[in-house]
Amino acid sequence: MKFRLHRLSKRQKKVTIPRVDIKITNGKFEIMGMGAWHSYWRDPYHLLLTIPWFGFLILICIFYAAINAFFAFAYWLGGDCIANAQPGSFSDAFFFSVQTLASIGYGAMYPKTTYANIIVTIEAMIGVVGIAVMTGLAFARFSRPTARVMFSCVAVITTHEGVPTLIFRTANQRRNMILEAQMRMYLMRDEITAEGYAIRRIYDLKLVRHQTPNFSLSWLVMHTIDESSPLYGMTPELLIHTHSLLMVSVSGIDETVAQVVHARHNYGANDILWNKRFVDIMHHTSDGHRYVDYKHFHDVLP
Image (cartoon, rainbow, N blue to C red):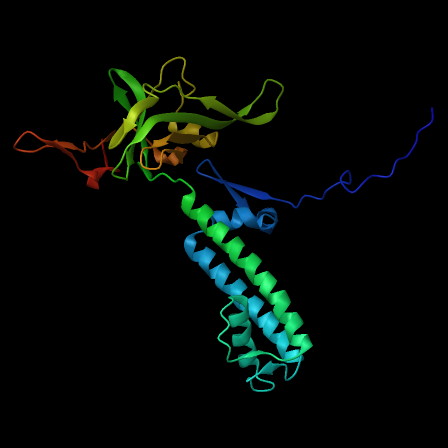
């Protein structure tokens, strides 16, 4: 039998994946090591969309200062190439670069050599492209629909209607409605298969009410723990031993922007309290009206 060796193309060559260390705390995965951040920085568009606004503005300022310093150094190498600028002055070259990059053009300083005109042409092109990119990124961040949904810090397992029930609650922090809101809850835990393999299995948890036509104030989410529930027969110690994790997601249509919004939250084994109940947040006034007191939204009682 003869074998023929083929040269691998660049796309077929084996890619070395950096090691990623994972730490499990309270059932939640935490990615450790710089290897995980390597792939994150390789996607700058996703990075600029997901970092907080403060970090986004800091990166823009750093990039803006760096690009102007680069062109200022190019002008400085050209010697006395800028009219009305002090020869050898890096600060004058820097501020001339700022005026050129932003297309300000006061007219006090202008290029007077062919070398300076070439650098100005290159910088002007980069400035136009840079402004377009920054404007697009800012618009993408502003136009991205987000939900402000608050989840209770803990979930409780208590008796409801004579049956053990897992309960947590959520609230819409905006003064509008999330239409056709849908709630999903999943259980993740470590298991050993019949063949002896360790796996991380995901179960769907059936909710008493998984959707609501309008989500405006608060929502008490319940899962009945009966014989068909993956939580049936579980104990606090067993939840911790199997690194159990409850994943909750809610989605719906924001009536203000008419776009789909979503939010998610995780509950680890230590976030599930047994034989507790939530403090009632619905109250009545003396004139018969009802109101919601969110001060005790996360509080529980025995």
